[in-house]
Amino acid sequence: MNQAPGVQCKCGTFKGQLSDTAFQRHNHLVCYCHDCQAFARYVGASMTMNERGGTEIIQVACSDVTITEDQESLAAVRLSEGGLTRWYASCCDTPVGNAPGTGLPFIGLIHDCLQPADQIEKSFGSVTLIAFANKALGEDRVEPRGMPMGFIRFLLLALGAKFRGDGKRHAFFLPTGEPITNPAVLNDAERAPLYAE
Image (cartoon, rainbow, N blue to C red; front, side, top):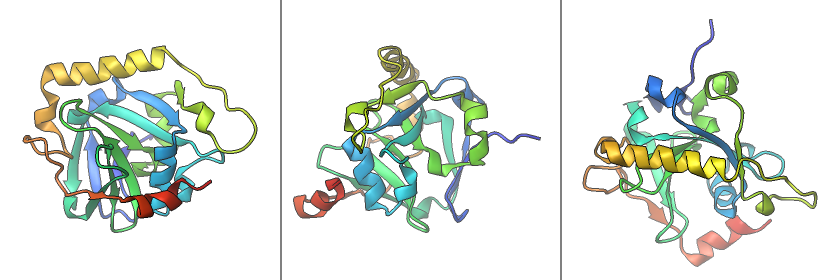
């Protein structure tokens, strides 16, 4: 029997659950932006990216994610002072997701933390948005896909979550708006090697 994906790091220490609504309201994309590439390099998870530097992400409302085991293993980083907070499981350096905070209450779950991986497409459908295709690695052009509908889906997801007050039920942020774990903020010297292609 097919099993819908849950949230879990590679070693199985950190775990979470997705609500049923996560499979109904979400955005399935591949992002080629330099920051997503840098984050994958930061955690040493080069397999997070496809051969052109894209990261597969499922954006869901923050209230659709519940941490169930070993929240203490979560670590966080910001690539710059005002950047997204990006989480990973420190037990095995599995990328988990990124989010701007309670003001825009969604989280982009990185495919590495969704298990079983072979159920991702069956549960969330195929990729409908390819973002920042112009930042892809290599010489051959990657074709963008899904704009502007992908952006509209994201707005509906994020604004719907904000309207429902989901920021008060954010698994990765406190109701005060502070991250549940203090993120490391990279300085210029730490950040520069991560953007080298």
